[in-house]
Image 1: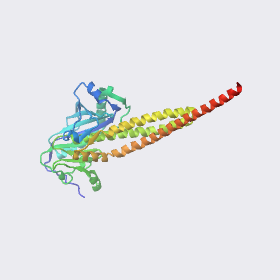
Image 2: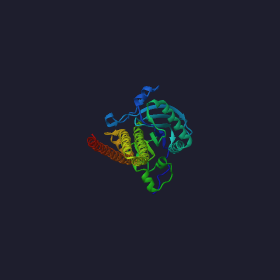
Image 3: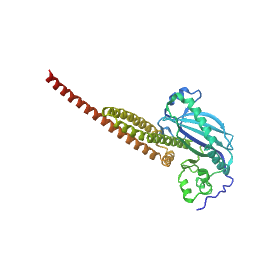
Image 4: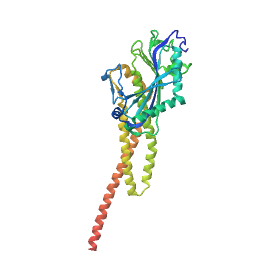
Length: 370
């Protein structure tokens, strides 16, 4: 199968943007109301433009902080930086590079240069410094801040207007999207088909193509709803990865503590069982609560287009697989907690029965002595 023609004529991107997302887990939770009270500058909640409020439901809408502009070494002089805070402990740093009047080839080159810079040491340092700046701003609103941060990143190539009418069918036919979505000029036919598999259009002039770490979006209205929905999906993925790793680390410690308790003297061991059971119950309760917040971060009900894109992102990012892994580990801990609790309760009953027997024996002996 031949690749689509590289010659795109005089096609130019008259208005658009390149959006680099980097997300971090920073705490167990963020008190967004407190951030609003602490903020020295105006802050706002995320609202989608195209969808009616009843069609999109946020659990708790993320809070937006504008962080100004930075100079980029990618051919564009400045990029706009913003942070979004999610109440379940995630921070999304977004870098928006505006694009005007670039040929298609120059636009593709800028997309890939920006992606390369974002993954470089200097790019990573810019995002790390920005995150540190945000954390200083919101420190009083963080519940149990994380010592180390799990990260997720995503790149969106967004076009709002071309210099001529372009049908979505041209992309993949006469206009090659592979370099935009993968950074590669040539791919095998099977890889090309897989790369373009998640493709959506609602109107004759819009298009969304999703991959694991990039997306291409044509949105003539100028709104950023697709980007916002994809950010929420990435935030959900980030948090599920965090709690999957947390439980992975907890399970060996749990087994070690159970084994240690078994090797103690019987009475002390059972008391340690009870204490361990309480610790496990607390962990299960906390992770279950945050799991529900993650699941309820966004509900798309009546907007068919955004619902399809959001559903495809959940599939592509394997959100349900990560969620299932977390639920499975929670079930193991929950079963261990139940077994420990039952063991501790049985031990208390046995101790009570032994105490009663000893009291009866003591009374009998006392009766003979007196």
